[in-house]
Length: 106
Image 1 (tube, one colour):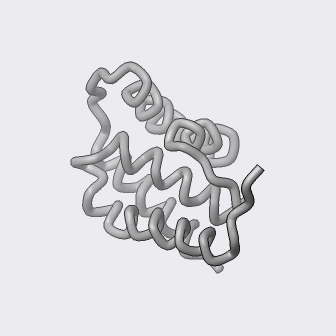
Image 2 (cartoon, helix red, strand yellow):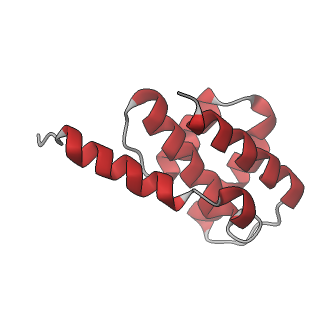
Image 3 (spheres, helix red, strand yellow):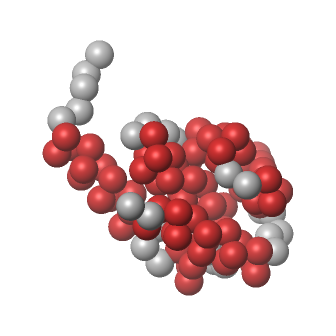
């Protein structure tokens, strides 16, 4: 098994964090992608685990407040079935703001 150096892990975190930097503004256009990506960034920040977007969504269903489960579940469904889902955009923005706040915590 290959292990990543501390520098590689920091590069990984910087890369995924940069990807979600404007999530609150972009989530209404890229809801599925950003919903799952925010989850994997928080999973890495919280537990230092590297997850796919699907795994990030599954992690979120076990670790985030239940009020976000419908959004996360819909994003997982869209990613697995490749069928467009209609999201509540205000709710998605609320989720993005919550997640960015959690990710920013020291």
